[in-house]
Image 1 (cartoon, rainbow, N blue to C red):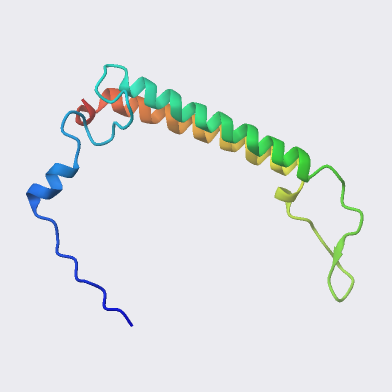
Image 2: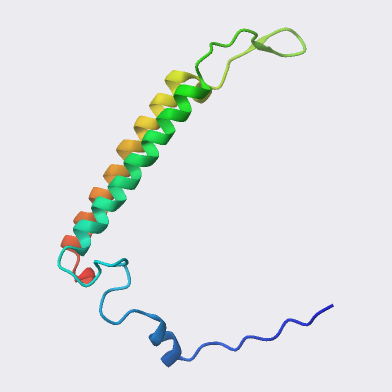
Length: 120
């Protein structure tokens, strides 16, 4: 059994050296020191949401092609309704909600970076 060495906490000076000095902490990436940092970050987030939406659409188109042939029943013989998300229509609604929510979040984040003084 090995003993775990004790880690001592970082001093305030060491913590300050870990943070980027030329830009705010929320701006990451190669464009963080430019004027277009907020726009580039918002557009890249929106692009990621679009790519993930395309992946969700492809998954739904492939996974839910066939209608259910045999239904699920209880021991007494009652039919149990299928989960709506496990159908083609339900998955399409989930994917459209993902797209609208993701793009709305990207737009809201961009608006906040333009309005709030903390990000400048």
